[in-house]
Length: 140
Ligand code: ATP
Image (cartoon, rainbow, N blue to C red; front, side, top):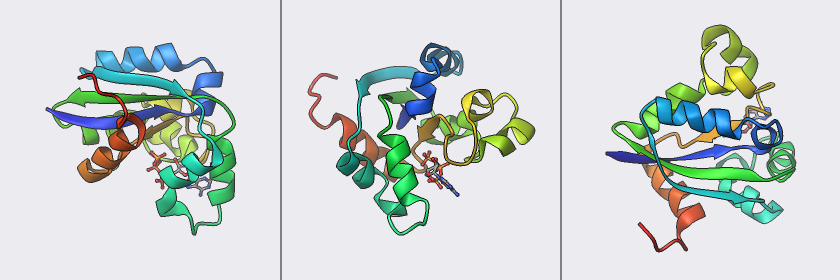
């Protein structure tokens, strides 16, 4: 089995999509092995999205990601990384509504920034991101 990091971004939490997203996760065969509700501060959000620090949208991304609480989860199943990316759909939620109408971003995303969920893009980012949010958790 493989693990990936999933996040319900501030617009997903404030739009009350948390329970529906978790239901879709479980229906798709993932186990939610860890879960935490947290508020990102500027430094944490900037570090998490460090790979985008030179992009023009970075300041907007940081203010979006710090605009309210997020839910971070560790998901487990075979091929968790690519299966979760598949379930969330493409980055741009408007495109997701057309090409992947059953995806989570089609369900609750607004545009290419406010896309309501995150998923690790590789097994190595999954390892980094799981550590980033859960390194202090000793259980499991
Ligand atoms: P994530 O890493 O959050 O799962 P992703 O891998 O689909 O998303 P990335 O290209 O890694 O997309 O971008 C990270 C995040 O930055 C996006 O999810 C989105 O919130 C924001 N973002 C990406 N492109 C843009 C853009 N052109 N304008 C505004 N925000 C953007």
